[in-house]
Image (tube, rainbow, N blue to C red; front, side, top):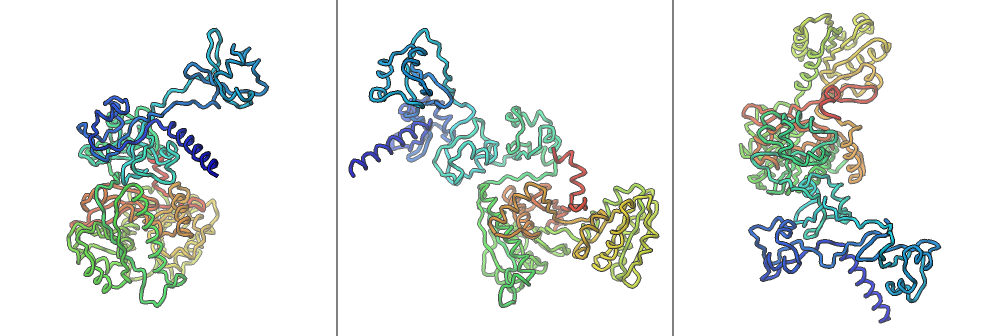
Length: 639
């Protein structure tokens, strides 16, 4: 038994010794009395090389218990014999081949059997074996066909992981993606440990700090120097001046510096800078429960919306934390009651809260805004598209664009792209909103060089088929503008137009697109080339969308909904802005951002906070939905 234990211990010592020899650098904990000079003497390294390995050391001073990187005294470069024979320290290291014996080795290398046994202890007690690695002393006059010992890789350098650092933070600092960092360091795939040494690209670090001169931007797939120059209106030579690494090529995932003055004077792109400089405090107020005695996901629509939104928000928080953000979160159940909201505000401290996400409903949002006054807390109204202008708070953020803005988006597209098409306006007969429809019709009548414009209305809630046949022209492009949110009128129009022959060119523009298209089939909607505006657009062909769906399903075991995407996008965007610029006014005037399914274009509402005007104009392309504007500007946005 003792012999077995001794054998195991000896084996472990051999393995440990072999493992330690593979590491070129190790860590050293500074002891009392040690200095930079004494450490460099101890490890036979120059002061300049030592400081290069430890750039955090300032004024040549180290402190007790500080962890530093030093050379590994036991390090030995041993080439891989599978790559071929190699020469080291006057010996040829040779891997014995099949049918190779002492005679053939003597003939090949001019060494006797006695000489080989003298330099290889294993051969003193055994014969040659295939695959065995033996040492052959080099002899003059013999040409050696051996692999040259590989030089050290100077494209990488050691890096000491610090407390609270994440893989994302380190990857960003060296202009690479997390996947690249993991490829260089397979041991960190399961997690990163402080005070361990990893490999990073041998290049200058990109500062995490948001300084006065520049902002950080992570290059996206398909971007090149020319596109970056156009995107930020920065001359290419200035980009190269601030980012010398771009001379070696522009690669997706690299983090570069953009001159801040130029970026914000001429660009509308929001550039986030996720750091852990301060703790960001977040409150989430959602109506998780109501007056109902029990939770019922089958019939309670609000419960499903709230839950989906929250699950998306949780993923956003997790994503930001993995990037290094320091976030403190409190979640409150408003029960969709003003009294409950009031109790939450009275019994909790909100003076130091940076962001409040919610409540969901307008009256509750208004109550929170008026209760907190004008303090520097961003109050995010996530889903209400109703008018927020009556609020006294300067930091209320309306994330859901209003119905009027959505309608304006469609109408502006029609006016901007009109080239003599046959215009047909179909409106319902609801008296209370005829003024709104008439305003749209008058707007269309003011189009320059307007040709034909027909206006149709249902009679007793029904539009006769011959009305369509009479006004649709076979030899011309027909643009149908639908002014109704009535499901019956909508379905009637779509069904009648959806059965027209394919040779008849029809495009429908819906100024109001809520639940009024639910009864219409996708085939009919595709046939009429339906165009409409929406505040969120889930493009399932997009890589980011696919990744989100995959991760969401892995965590929650169900598919994400529209509100799952909203929960992620709204939470991520709001916090990214506040982390980058802690002052609300600065954060939400910092430019356009686009997340997984939402676009954020914030405009100031006078002295009353911000409203989001980020809207997608989408259309049916066959049975798929596509972003009209992105497809038309693909030259700028995609490679």
